[in-house]
Length: 280
Image (cartoon, rainbow, N blue to C red; front, side):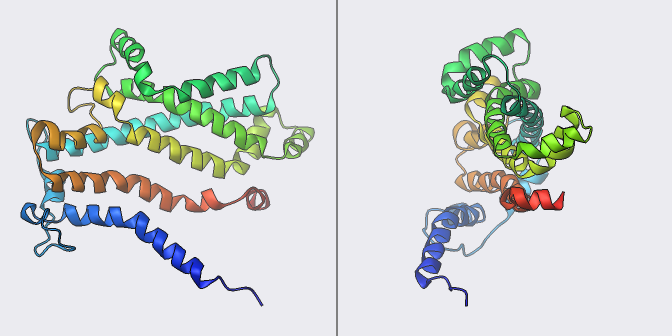
């Protein structure tokens, strides 16, 4: 007979769920609360309203209309984060395989150099990156943000994928090469299918790094055409208004894409190497 989990374990999980979900629940409640009820301390508003969400999705952008500006910022963030993730994941998947399987001079030194670049504080790179973007005429553009974010996300993808490839049995690749596959063929047909959980997890964390980045987006953008969600939310209470309910609505919308991605791809994250090799 299987041992049933101890009741204390259920209690611990319930407390952990409350701690994790309570701030997000309060964010949702604040986003639908009228302005006069935000500071009342009520657990649920007497007259909940979706007017802030309606303003974000239907109002025109430009001028002092932060709701419409936020909608444009959501699209900008989606383009920038997706472009950064795709580029960094391709470079990280191929480069990580090279660092994990190939033997060449200064291999580990180069890999640690990428890690050192990733660990540098962003503020230390602001001036060099700003000058580079200015010389390339990429300031206040989505392409400029993608290039900048790749300098952050690509080292992370390289390091993560390299370590994941090292956990894969090299005997499977050797067997494929004995059967006539080239190294690239073994990578595409054997390694990448087995590395799917690592690829998905790396892509998700890379997407989050680009989606949540604030400092570079604040300094390198100045117009609606390139501003991202963190900058737009910051302007809710700084430059234009003090509608904390609108800040909460923006926070809810900003949190949805990462949550949806995590729910959609959780089976790839939790799936293991053995299950992947059996299915393949």
